[in-house]
Amino acid sequence: MSQPAIKLYGFPLSGHSHRVELMLSLLGLPMEFILVDLKHGAHKTAEFLTEVNSFGQVPAIDDNGMVLADSNAILVYLAATYGKGQWLPSDPVGQARVQRWLSAAAGPLHVGPASARLAVVFGAEIDTANAIARSHALLKLVEQQLSQTRFLVGEQPTIADIAFYSYVAHAPEGNVSLADYPKVRAWLAGIEALPGFVGMPRTVAGLQTP
Image 1 (tube, rainbow, N blue to C red):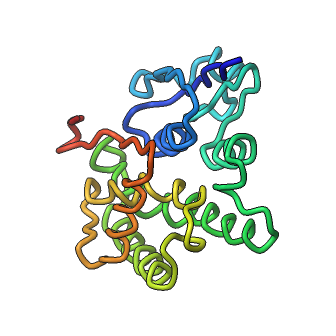
Image 2 (cartoon, rainbow, N blue to C red):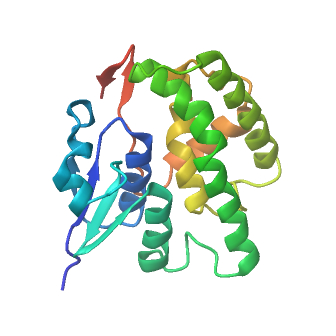
């Protein structure tokens, strides 16, 4: 029996949504993308809050009736359910190292590159100078890590890399240059070379491009 399509509730320019879309594609899982129109508040409707995500955010998935929200939580679920041990280490140390980067994705990555991009692409009222400064502080740490290992946790990609990829790859859209981070750029290329990779639409001055 073929795998039923997993419904992904998301928005094309959302890096959080892209994390999940990328993971689904890398795993070769069938997906049905359900557009949630953030610009018109579709994520705040009573139906969405009741049936999809009470926090009123994207992404969320519906895997044959199992509804789950939060991009990092979804990555853990997909890796544990479908990843065959390739994307989430089975040993406690490996799992802890992955969790360290997932926490960073929800913290420094969010207030840094993600926020800087949010200000440009979505016009959010954010202290851009602070977000850009935070971005470079984080990128220096990532560069340092990638000078020791090919991927964030070791020599093989994990969900930690998927959690970081989207907002780092699109950091220049928030006026965060990657020019000083050769290891980061090589790491991005390594992710993009993985079988099943799918990119997120890029934007120029807030306009979506192929």
